[in-house]
Amino acid sequence: MTVVMTNEPPAFPFDWDGTRLPAEIDALRAEPVRKVRTIAGAEAWLVSSYELCRQVLEEPRFSLKDTSAPGAPRQYALTIPPHVVNNMGNITGAGLRKAVMKAINPKAPGLEEWLRARAGALVDALVAEGAPGELRGAYADPYSAGLHCRMLGIPEEDGPRLLRSLDVAFMNAPREIEAARLHWDRDIAYMTERLDDPATGGLMAELAALREDPDYAHLTDEMLATVGVTLFGAGVISTAGFLTMALVSVLTRPDVREALTAGEHGVAGAMDELLRVNLSIGDGLPRLALEDVRLGEVDVRAGDLVLVLVEAANHDPQRFPDPLAFRPDRENAADHLSFGGGRHYCPATALGKRHAEIALETLLDRLPGLRLAVPVEQLVWRTNFMKRLPERLPVAW
Ligand code: HEM
Image (cartoon, rainbow, N blue to C red):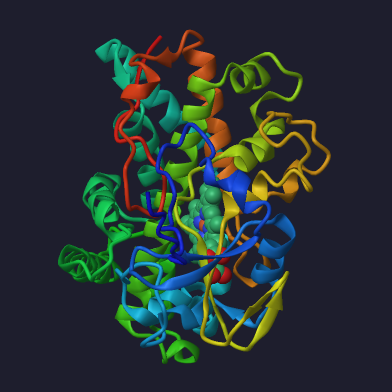
C-alpha cells in the first residue's frame, strides 16, 4: 500500500458537537501554533495554548479591524459590511461609547427585576403547556431577545423577526450569503424607523436625541441604526448561545448540576467556571498580523490570519490543572478567555453573567426535576455557525 504524504493543513473548525472538547485539541498541545485550512479555503495559524492566545489578543500587532481588509485571508465570508467588523471602535470613534456602556449595565434601574420576571413568565408558560418543553425556542432565545429589545427601547414583539436574521448573520460560509445582505438591509431600515418612532425608548431614543446636538452633527441615521442592529446581534447571539450551552452542561454533566444546585457557591459563584468549560464559541477569534511576529516557535508574517481557539486556551492544563473537571473554587477560574481579552474584551461581561445567572437560578429553582428528554446523541448540532448550538433542547421535569 502506498502512503501519500501530504502537507495539507487540517480543516478548521474540527467538531460541532457541544458535549465534548474536540479530540484534536490534545494533539495541538505539542503544536500550539498550527496551520489550518479555513472554511473560506485560506490558510491560517490556529493558536491553542493559553499563553499564546493571550499574547495574540493583547498585542496591537494582531488586528481585528484589518481582518476585513480587501484580499486578506478569511476564516469565512463576511456577512456584514466590512467597516462594521470594527464595531466597538466605530462606536467609540463616534462618541457613543458612554451611552452604550450605560445601556449594557446590568445595574440599570429595574433591569434585574425585569430579567427575573421574564424568566419566571417563560417558566410559567412551559409549565402551563406541560412537558416536554424546548429550552432554546421557549426559554433562552425569547429571554435574550426580550432583554435586548428592552435595552434598545424597541417593542419586544419585534424580537422574533430580529432573532431570525441571526440564524443567517452568524453563518460561517465560504462565500457571501445573499440572505445575510437582505437581512442586514431590512434590519437597518427597521432600526432607522425606530429612531423617528415616538414609542421608542432606551438606548435608541437616547441615540435619536443626539441628532439634535450640534456636537454630534457627524452622526447619520445609518450609523445609529447600525449600533442598534449590531448590539442586538452580538448581544443576543452571545447571551443566548452561552445560556443554551450552560443548560447543555447542566443537563448532561452531573458534576455541573451538583455544583450549581447543592454546592456552596450557587449559580453566581460557579459562573466563571461555567464560562470556562463552555463550548459555545464555534470559530476562532480572528486577527490579522500587521507585522512579522514571532509567536511561540513560529514566525507569523505580516498579512497572515491568526485564529485564537478559546476552548483550547480554557482547557490548557498548564493554566487550568485537570481542565475537564468542573471546579467553581479554582482560584483562577476567572482567567478564562470566554469574553476575549485585550482591546476587544467584551464590554458586556457583567450583563452576560447576570443574564445567565438569573435564567439558570429561575429554571433550577422552579423545575428541580429538569432533565434532557431525548438521548443526548439525538441532539442536532448546528454546523458552520459562529456558535455551537443544539438546534433543539427538549426537556422534561
Ligand atoms: C455571556 C455573554 C457574552 C459572551 C460569552 C461574549 C463574548 C464575547 C467575546 C469572546 C468577545 C471578543 C471578540 C473578539 O475578540 O474577537 C466579545 C466582544 C464583544 N461583545 Fe460580547 N459576549 C457576551 C455578551 C455580550 C452582550 C450582551 C453584548 C451587547 C449587548 C456584547 C457585545 C460585544 C461587543 C460590541 C464586542 C466587541 C468589543 C470590541 O471589539 O471592542 N457581548 N464578546
